[in-house]
Image (cartoon, rainbow, N blue to C red; front, side, top):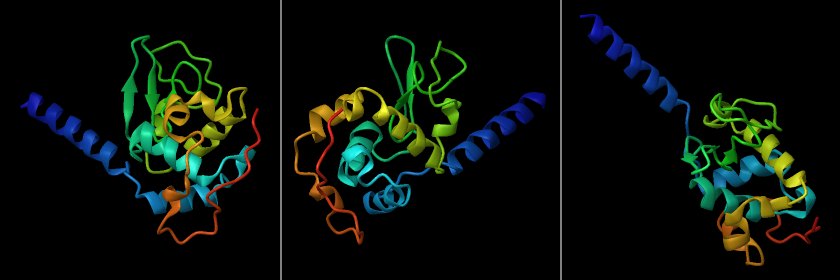
Length: 160
C-alpha cells in the first residue's frame, strides 16, 4: 500500500511539472520576445531570436539536452549548466545566477534575461552553434511572416 502512495506522489509531481511547461507558437513567442525588449537588442532582430529558439528547443520550454561533457542545456534557448545556470549536478560558473530548472517553465522572462547576458558576452549570438549554422546571414523575415507585430525583420547588426 505504501508503494502505491509513492507512485501517486510521483505521478502528481510529474503532472504538476508538465502543466507549467509550454511549446510556444512562433508568433506568440515573437510577441513575448518583443515585449521583453529583444527586438534590436545589441543589433539582433526578433527573427534572430526566433531562429535560435526554433533550432535549439523547437520553442519548447521544457526541453533539456544532455552533453557528453556532463553538462546539460535547458529551456527555449538551451542555456548550458556549465556556464549560465546551476543544475546542482555539474560544476558551473552560473553567470545568470539561477537554477537551471527555472528555465523549464512557461514563464520565460528569466530565460530572456539570461539569453541577453549570453548575447552581451564576447561571442554574441555566435554562442549558439545553431545561430551560426542556420540563422547568421540568412533572410530572417520569414520568422515574422503572418505575425501582427511592429518588429522589423532586419536590423543592422552591431558585431561584437
